[in-house]
Amino acid sequence: MKRLLFKILRYSGLPLLFREIWQRRKVTILLFHDIDRATAEKTFDYLSSRYNIISLDRFVQACLRRDAGAIPEKAMILTFDDGHIGNHAIKPVVERLNIPVTIFLCAGIINTNRHYWFTWPHPGIGKSALKRMPNREKLRLLAESGFRVNREFDAPQAMSLEQINDLKGVIDLQAHTIFHPILPQCDDDEAHEEIVTAKKILERLLDLEISSIAYPNGDYCDRDIELAKEAGYRSGITVDFGFNTIDSDLFRLKRLSVNDTKNLDELAVKASGVWAFFKTRNGKKQDHGFMNRPYAGKPVVKHI
Ligand SMILES: [Zn+2]
Image (cartoon, rainbow, N blue to C red; front, side, top):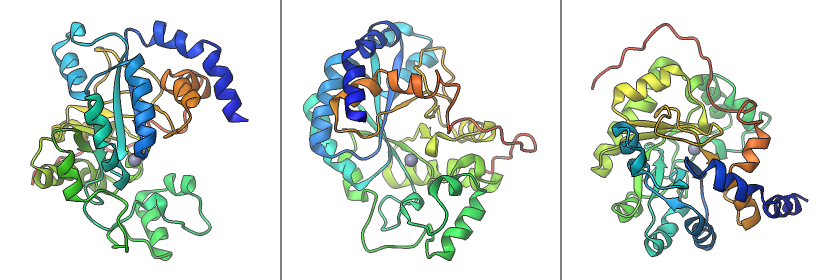
């Protein structure tokens, strides 16, 4: 049923209209998680023939220099969250098309056999309920059914250091915290660790400068932005609906999820923003994003 809807929407001309009018002078950031090589071939071919794929860094630099001329029309940035083991397979596609891609890595999960907490089949409580509770409470509940963030399983879910090193120079590598908590559900100490320490771990491990963070699940609060700035990141990426310009808040960059689809109709509809525009009523009705978490003033950033 949905397939038909995507086909109708695609050929309704709306994606074309969004692209030629709304996206023309804006920067669209897309979110992927884990697509296989064949999907990457199809997806990146489609996108690179309709948009100008630019790097996240090029956009951030243009914003910092207030240089709108440095950004082409219909600019698009491709990003992947989590650092899934399957991400390594997109390397040849990225090389063939010579396009920039950014992968946001979980510093505590890459290069281990640890698992992402949200893949653990916790009995009784759904993922969305776990996301809505304080992080310590969530971890306590998960521990009852045998999950710990540092438990080593038989097989990895994230890329190894060897795989990541192989992507260096081809793919831009950035931060997605350590263990992928819902940041606004973290207390100040946890948030500090997940934001500030993640950057240090990745920089040490990869011998790279880490300058951007994608907030897990697209959830963030003022404190998290403050911590990201103090840690030295230059941008923070959300999953808030919308497009970006050089006037955008660099710590609240907007991004569209394309649901890792293999279907080109769905891709066309989602990459143009048509889907999220209607689904979130132009960003007014989202189930993730900014959380107004009360906290006692500016947190102290500990320097280690
Ligand atoms: Zn994620």
